[in-house]
View 1: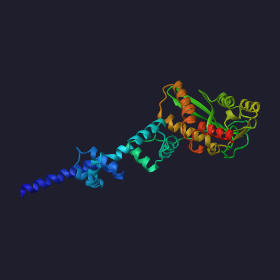
View 2: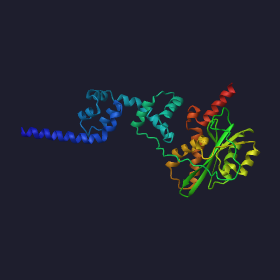
View 3: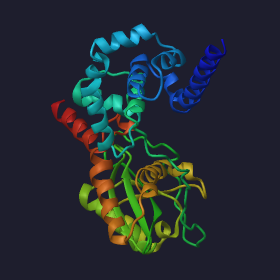
View 4: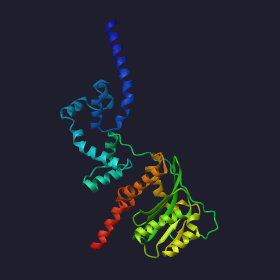
Length: 327
């Protein structure tokens, strides 16, 4: 009797120890689908008893063995999809969640996959989108004596045609060699960045260069509305002379109201959370190069934009042009 009691006590102690060890590793698996639980059990056969894992994970031992006998078909069926999802995720610079993954699979590969399944695949492959830090809205200095233009946009950020409404703003980029300033010009028609400029200071030439890039690229007709905040760069005589030369109508936000220029702020939020906050720029040249690549290659040509029915700005403009020519 004494011997049996000792044996049972040892078994209980062993199971208790196994349960504690399992709880640290397996609690997160409880919320996953059965085939993921089966895969986890198979992976941990050398660490815990099968009976214990099946009991705690709330799966049938016979079902687990049946899954093994079928050659883990569920996992095998999804191997190609898992690989494709991982490739798309990497190409998106680890920024796509289930919504954009679903759209990409449907548009480019003709695959209809639910967001729930994509969420499970991301968890199974340990794919995590880049953590988004809180974006601090920055505004330019509006304490000056220049004349302020009226707010002609008034938060109407829709444009039915290209080159009708542009918005712009300035932000800063920190590098190990010092701070850079980025000015951008966005066409509200497609949300494409049509002009931008980087410099080591915030002089008027910064915003003039960005707008001139847009003018040379797009050749807008007279009457284009150009909306910015009340910063001294945009209110300066030099900038106003440039607008007058090309027949551009100026519009300005209300003082300190970031929502009056929400599209520009949204772009800077994407730039900062998808690139800048995850990089430590060693030099200004490196920052310039990576920002160029982000704007011209990724944002304008690859990144799906919800405003464009999940098409990139370039893809949206090309599609609208084809439809117009076919009409």
